[in-house]
Length: 87
Image 1: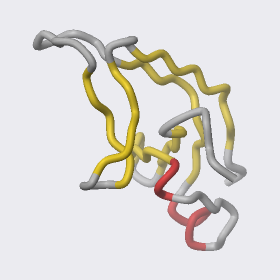
Image 2: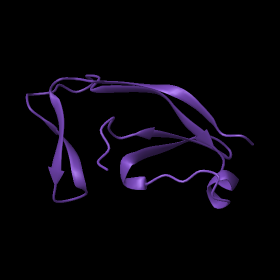
Image 3: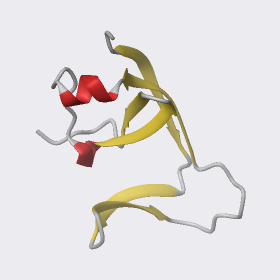
Image 4: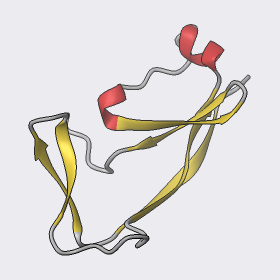
């Protein structure tokens, strides 16, 4: 399978910030009160691939920079945790 890429759109509620975390290195924190059920972020698009793509090295992602979700039996999607990636 040829992996696909769809444009990534990210929206974050302005009360949500990313900063250093002792638990995972980087974490999301609230700057103001957030009520149950409020949408805090919306991500669409991403890189779609299979486990074979990963196993054979067709796709190589630094896990600390991406969120991964399973969208099918053997189909995954990766979206960046942030649009800023240190070099």
